[in-house]
Image (cartoon, rainbow, N blue to C red):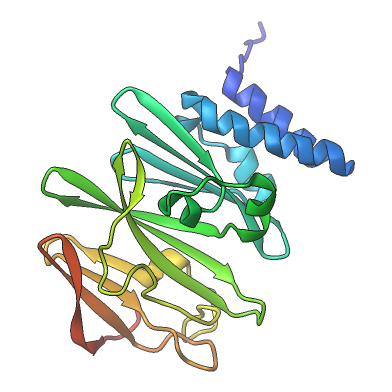
Length: 241
């Protein structure tokens, strides 16, 4: 007797949109991308779906906060650009946003057509508990016209919407540049550049100013003091793991 395997609506939609987005017909693929992003912004069931096919076939990257309240999607759309979708929950309410995270945090509405040329890869989300609220450190990376890769962290929290916090001493950019290679020349995950030590309440950002695109054995450390991170001088050296 054959066992019948039923697919959920989310699984069926993933397969449908994946097939359409891979179409050689530009208009069909473009329309599927719009429909897919709209679906992600409206259907709460997507927030717990694995999207294994999308991750395998499209290179989709999914990051979810430890508390499960915030999730991001980014996938390449060509020429080092990405599409971005964010999802978060406020009590029983589900909210979605399509477009560059910087526009969201600045309180601006996204233009989906422009977002495909401006959005970055969202690489990791770090949860930090601060009194009665959770702070989310969201690491992004992008490639400049020169070909050099940069990464930075935005601090945010959920207050109905996802809002930017003036958490660092000078705003949001705290680490960059170059292609993020380790001493052996292997690509280094962007998420590995940022470390949160919960016990010590310190956040470390690796420095990558080497002209040969190799991460030197040093990082900048930030100490959580009250409701802000303060830079700790001097730059601390350590061996790469």
